[in-house]
Image (tube, rainbow, N blue to C red; front, side):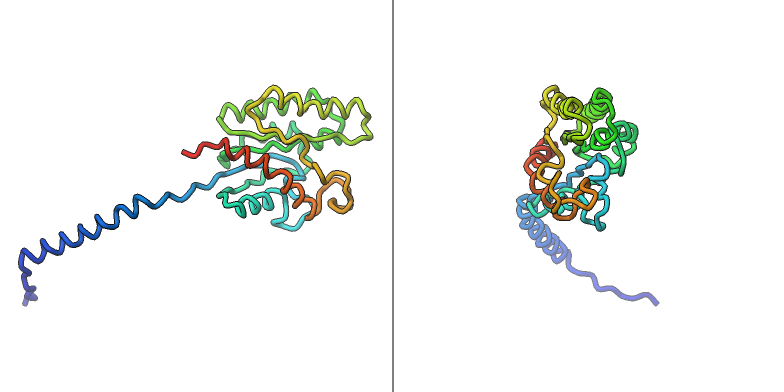
Length: 226
């Protein structure tokens, strides 16, 4: 035998629908007034062992500490670690396409230290960095170029030509944020470096982040918000 279901008056159904609709209309202005959550910006660091956090505990490398500092400032930024220890500008150029598979919104190019250590011809380093920056521009990716200095044992002429490579690139590319020296304030400071006197320790990374933040924020300001 079937179950008898009482029929409600038609006017009850209409009134309930009207009340429900009224409630939705009342909430609508609140929804429209609530700002959408800011999207997360993906910032990639293309670098070498300094970026890769050589000799540091997990989570204490430059990308992770930079991300933490940016988030403390209220910025929704994820810093992608694209550092490979021992990499040169040629290596960074060769792996750029697959590094960009992570789909960053902006890129920090932090290569050149190993070129200087190996005494690579500055013109070769310049050609590699130019190719990297060209590729980023073609993809409409805002870029920051972090400069580097050569070790003094390679002579004053080489050191001048090497440092000049980064300065000339910055002059030729006003669209690129230029940070003259990645290890500013840390290079040569025993208390801020590991025993090899090349790679920053945890305190050194903190100092790098502190000094880099204004330039990085200038880069982030160039990322489209739409």
